[in-house]
Length: 160
Image 1 (cartoon, rainbow, N blue to C red):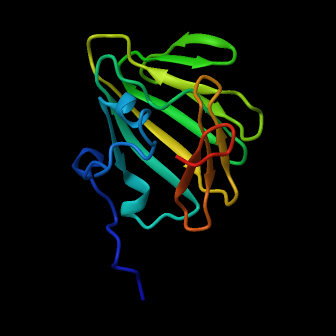
Image 2 (spheres, rainbow, N blue to C red; image 1 turned 180 degrees about the horizontal axis):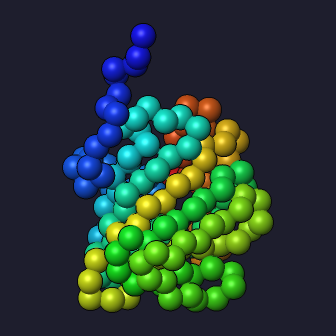
Image 3 (cartoon, helix red, strand yellow; image 1 turned 60 degrees about the vertical axis):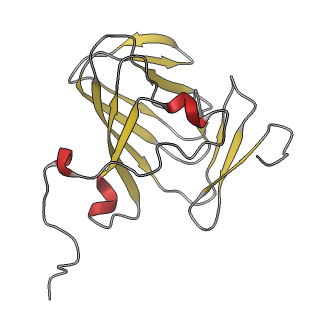
């Protein structure tokens, strides 16, 4: 018997945006203003990896500069011209370009929109248990809890 709990297909832009713009604690959450994520994978009940359709308005960033210990990440640019900031330096991106970040390499990365038009891209990441994230430019570290939610602390371990 087929599973009718999830749709067969949707128009990605019809997916509702995430209700909470950022999981970061303040003062970091407000730095994500202008970022809108539509969690596409959740609509289909995907549990091994997540897929987001993400829009960055002019001046917005994808995330704080970060690296994951266990989560691979992949980005595919659909519209606009963001700049990829990573350990290798800055790389201008355009539609059709993609980037990937292997878990555990420590390669910190983020996208920023320095243009006057929106950027739209797909981001894919796995949901590996025990993942953690480091943020080289900020007093922040994160660990993925057993409940699937991120737990944030200062670099000295004090919780936010």
